[in-house]
Image (cartoon, rainbow, N blue to C red):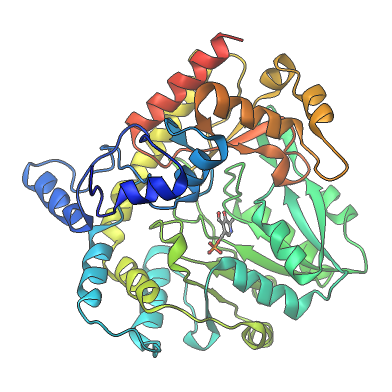
Length: 452
Ligand SMILES: Cc1ncc(COP(=O)(O)O)c(C=O)c1O
């Protein structure tokens, strides 16, 4: 076996200490993506192929390779953790990268105006958002943007409000800025989450200056309504707390749900009290290309962020993102119903075949939040976690359940405990993969649970 997927997999696997391959490997170099899409189109199929499993093993991916290394499971059935997707990227991205690679010089990049124009046009066309180019700040990811904003408005030692469970990466941003998380647990009515506005207000104190809104909410998949956003926006305005609206998952809107950009709210004062953070990194799975942007209608706020931000954007990152924004809409439009049907598939399968697991179909994101209370009880996760914890390393019951699924089902999930208060007894499952891989993962989980 010499080369697969355009990579020397044997040498990678040797470095990684892995001798076999995960299931579902499909060959073909990067340019084959373009050819296969063209072939599918010619055959009268849908234009882009999300259905053929596309192996990422051998690419140093967190979602697959890191799990294979961690769990020493070369035959991992599915990496279903970190939030990126398993599909071949949009052919327009591969084409643009291939074209740029022909020119063999990689000196400093002058950011072209047509890139920032493309960001403006994308936001106008898809969400009817007008972004003043003067207010647009490019960042090397949503994290660096959030960190620059926190440094601008929330001095070390002050508190940052979070509706929990929430994206675990926010806690890292707070550590990086010396700020402190103030978890505001959401209401959980049989798996349906909502913001408790009274609780939110109770958590505000004189040293609260920022709130990180996650819309859609990672990991629970809530799409916040205009009414929710207005309420929270008004509370924040009243208490002089700046809203940092992370809308990175905004394209993943499931059937019957709606995305309301915070910047589109009808109250100008509420909008002026916010900064919005966006990227192509989820929509087009360009996470390691390190490009994102933020904007605000408030010139003072955005000037402060600009002062604390340093964006050394790479040439290939810019090329990939520009291609996605200018030519990728069709690919994304075909992907979204595929993700929605994956969500349906998971909700139906869990209901029919996993009595120990509960879930409510997400309104947004490609993440599914699973209630695994019964599994945790059955395997004695609390007792195991207590016995494994030492003064140096605390193990949570959710990590025990996560390890149990990796060991017994060869499926890697994310432990709910890392998502803050309310993450107890949950696991997060990333469903952005082919239906074949999804089916194999669900079957394997159900089989492992049946043996309990
Ligand atoms: C809500 C949310 N914000 C930010 C990020 C990370 O963004 P970036 O990779 O652009 O820094 C993620 C990644 O999973 C996320 O889910």
